[in-house]
Length: 238
Image (cartoon, rainbow, N blue to C red; front, top):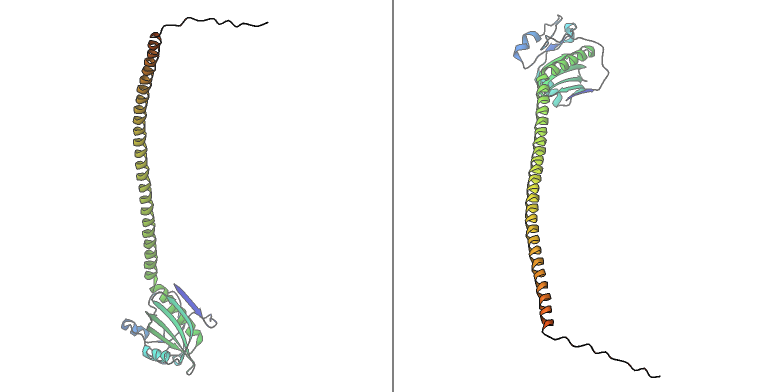
């Protein structure tokens, strides 16, 4: 993430001249100061921003250790901060000497330092270093984006796998239940067939027993002779 803290009004100047003493030996030859002569600091990459020229009296030779010492003593006022991942640009103001310090940081360590006495040049230098920080952090930005995309893909894959597992479990459960239902239906049909056979057999047995009972009743009645029917007359008195 990039954060830009603006603690004072921005100037419209687009360039600067300064003395640059950094920890990168490869840039010392282009960042050295020629006292009394105009000087242009070579950017870390071509930014397309023109750098203005100032008199040699506006430039003072310093080291990164000096800025770190002043910052540790609390002698510097932070005017602007630009942060882009591991890189940062800062604009300091030293009240005692009326000097502006512009620094480029890598992992909180001072990498390059520019010192000048004009706010216009300092603001231009700060914008330039902010562009350097942005450019240098492009790979980190891309890496962060790819990490986030990969993390998202991992989460989506995990979600898809979980959903697929749930669907497989549901299908397996459905198949198991369907098999159990089929087995139950088959078992029930067998029981129905057996019960129906038992019912038919029992009904047939009952019918036979009823016929036997009827036959026995008839046979029992034949053992006894029939009694003559007596007619009883009832006298009716007058």
